[in-house]
Every structure is written in C-alpha cells, then in structure tokens.
Image (cartoon, rainbow, N blue to C red; front, side, top):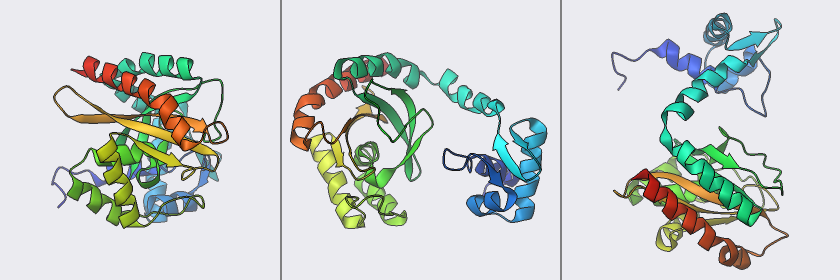
Length: 251
C-alpha cells in the first residue's frame, strides 16, 4: 500500500535518471518512456524538470545526464562509512593479488558496487562504482542472498527475471537456490563464466560484529589464468582476511 506521504512525481523522476547507463548514455523521449515503464507524457515532464534542475541536458531529440548527478551519488559515499573503510582493504587486496576487487550491496534484484580497486590485469566487464550486477548469476549476489533468511532469498529468486547471459548462466530458480544454499554452507560463492565469458569470480559476505549483513566482497580473474579449484585455493584466504578486517572495523 502506498503511503499518503509518497511523492509519485519524485519516484518517477528517479526512475527516469536510472534509465541512463553505459548501454544507454543518450536516450530519446520514447526510449526513456519504455525503459522507465511510464507514458511519454510522464517521461517528458520528468525529463524537462530534470533538465531545468541541471541533472540532464538535451539537444532537442536526445537526453543525457550531466555531472550534477554525481552530487546524488556523493551524498551516499560521503555519509556512509562502509565504502571509505573498505577502500584501503580493496586496494591492498588488488595489489597483493594483481586482480580486481569489489565491495557491493544488495538492491532489489541486483547488487550495486559501492567500492572497487582495479588491478593491472583488466576485465572486460568494466565494473565501476555504481555498476549493477544481477543477483542470481553473480558471486556477490549469491553470497548476499545466502545471508538473508532462506524463505526471503527463495521468494526473491522465484520472483525475478533470470535471463541467460552466457551459455554457462544458471537460470532455473531451483538450481540458483541450490547455489545460494551452497554459498551459505561454504561461507563463500563462486561463479564460472555465468556473468561474462572468460571471467570467474568469488565473493564472501561482510557482517558487522553484531551479525548484521552489510555487503559482499569479491575478487575476479580471467578464466584462462586459473581453473576454479586453483582460483579458490589461491585467493580465498586473502579474501577472507580482508573480510575479517573489514568486519572488525565496522564494529
């Protein structure tokens, strides 16, 4: 039920802003309408308001975001201690392993990267702060689902779309639940080229000392460099040390 304090216009404006991405850097009015799931008239009002406020610009046909949007992201990064505490640990992890490390949190059917350190070996996924990954086929997503009450995790998985992103993507709801159960049992999750061909990743959950799940910590490698067993054996201890240090700092 919608609260009487709910501002539908604000909700729609935020939905419109979220339509822009690396895949959709510039959008027409009709494209925004389709992606936001609203009428063209509603999309137009939101876009023109955002343009007047300086959050989007337009050439009369297409719209794109402006640097002012970074003020919205900075509000989170500046006020939440988790990314700042995690960044030195991610930098150290990436430096020691020469691989890329990320910290992410759960949002609806995705995880969103809130801190990241990129090693010299680059991955084509091109993750950055603010990148979203599908929860059902990412190691971060599965380890965060494993930290939820099982009934809630199962309900989320059954209720979300699960497109096959590569030939290796596990898409069946029961099969993904089994992967999440395995992550809960082991204390970490792995994926093998399910999100992108040629990329393997592993993630661990981050809890406060009080037991609250706050994030997932991951590392990713090119598949040709490590078989999965060697990947886990080589990097899981370093990932777990970073996990323990961050949990201790979170209190």
